[in-house]
Length: 561
Image 1 (cartoon, one colour):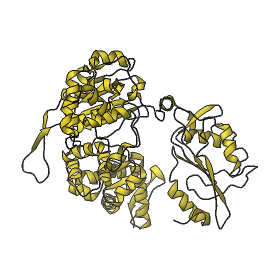
Image 2 (cartoon, one colour):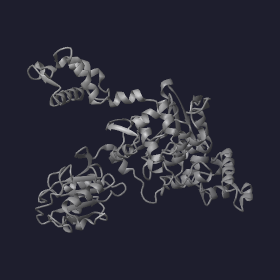
Image 3 (tube, helix red, strand yellow):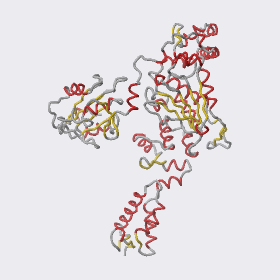
Image 4 (cartoon, helix red, strand yellow):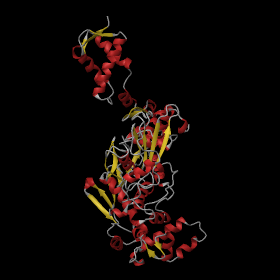
């Protein structure tokens, strides 16, 4: 790409559009021709307010000197006494809580017009630190700014600090007597299984409980940690020593008004939770197969337990809440407190990303040592692939927020033909599989995802009314649904109008009555009427028909003489 310092205004516009494609919680465009009152002026509208808003999310960039919507380079024309150097210190003085490292202003100048553009790079807030402007914290809300909402405020104030690990805290009163004997035995068995190829593996059965737990990481020089109480503690001791942080998993079926609570040792009882979930056999009919495939609704080990163990490892125990497993018809929803940690769920679907950190690092390491979770980033990938192989909708994280993570597992098809085609196209990259799966669930796709699916010939239509392409409709035997969405071409509708007018002149109401039921169901009524209006105007220009009456409702359409 051309260096921005040597670009013309048009080239600079294209460069900006590639780097800052749309306004959102990370990017803001401002056509400020004067900086005089826009650096620190009217609250909620000036630069310091936008710096607060971006910093209170994940940081970002404010582009100054461009046209809103097009990013056409208009340039800053009046700088007052601000420069790219001194404006940083002035912004810092007006935004308490903003980290000084990372805030910088990059000045760009179009080589042909001399127009100057500023890129104000805004760092993310420090952990548990709000960034203020005009004595309040801000966040973006649509096209404007608003005061920081309570859910975002709480999420910031509850963020983990570097080096802080709730699960690593020692429980000084606890002893080996407070641990479950069967859970210790299971931990020894799973640890030996994981390290069976080590030269010292044959010694594991002879280790003392103290040495075993130190090796797993559940104790520190014999002293018991909170992680140890969660995985191995007996229920009474765990409840007493971990209070006020409840160590509890609740299984619930709201439709039947039933629920049950499960407590440590979670090394054993998470299996009890998974087995409590209703898991009858279902029949699936893969394409090109003569016989139905009968299998349990949910994959207990690769999906249910993996998801449940992820909830346990990533729960924000400092929020003093429980893990909840909600069961409904064909759906299991697992909820743990704390937003998704270290990236986004889709980052891990391909199995190429490795998590750099865990919310409860000691707990996560111990769970990996006893085979409860995978610590190198394959967990989500394996769950996605397990569902894909079962011809079922993929698991997703819809409903998650900054304060909680929601994991949804589907146990029934949404659309049989669609699901079979989607899951059996093994040539599709996993990203396309995920996006098409969201489409069948009627979930939102961003602009880049839509554009890529269009290029691949998989979808058609305009957002948010996207639908499968003709190619996909044929593959999934949904030709009728496709045509109902897409509609027929204009020649067909013009032929119908000509047929009606061959019977004599007709008012617009009769033309509407004939065409409206035949137009695509996905088009709104106002748009359908606009389509008919444009269709008639085209036929007039083509000298096929003419208006023998007045305007609008008085129009009387007839064949052109």
